[in-house]
Image (cartoon, rainbow, N blue to C red; front, side, top):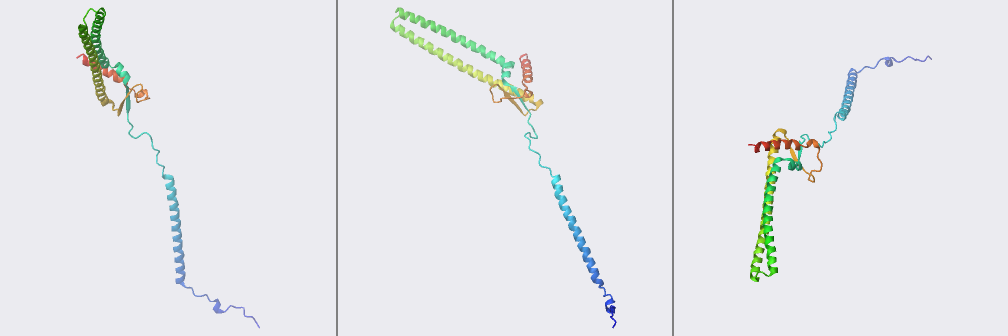
Amino acid sequence: MTENNSIPESSKQDHPVDVNHVHKNKGKNFFNIIIFIGLVVIYILFFLSKYDKKTTELPPPAKSHISATTNVIAFVNTDEIMQKYELVQAMKNDLNKKMDRMEAEILSKQTAYENDANYFQEQVAKKSISEKSAQLIYEKLMEEQQKLIDLRDKYTEQLALEEYDMNIILVDSITNFLKRYNLQHNYDYVLGYSKGGGILLAKDTFNITNEVLDVMNREYNSQIKK
């Protein structure tokens, strides 16, 4: 009996192809590829944007102790001003002359009082005057002594007031000058430096004392010549 190894015709015949099914699978695969590519692009852009932020965002600048509008500062040595400003010297000379006159007057009165007191003591020791006269002379001497004390206090107070007024005049003179001087130089602050004062150290580059003294003295001399 011969084996029939042939394939049945029905098996040989190709199965009918579902065209619609093929098109559907192709469309589905194409759509999946597009989604995959889109995800890859989004993924790349996401990490690139993070990388860009890391590389482009710079840290904020460190805060500077010097502001954008730095103040312009200068100083004058007030000790030198008091020593070399000719107006100061003139006012001091006037005050010293007045003080000398007052001291001379007090000294003269005090000498006269001491002479009277010594004479009185001599007369009392010699018993050349009566007790009643001695009492009257003693009371008069006490009045003279009190007048001397009052006069000395009066002159001391008067000199103190004149020195106070002199300082006010000097401060006004220097301040007014610096205001005019600063119209050209535009300093924010002009400080006063003195030995033992509030400013312990200052660079000489900020020192305008010599220039200020020079101009103030020239102005003073021009005024007294008028």
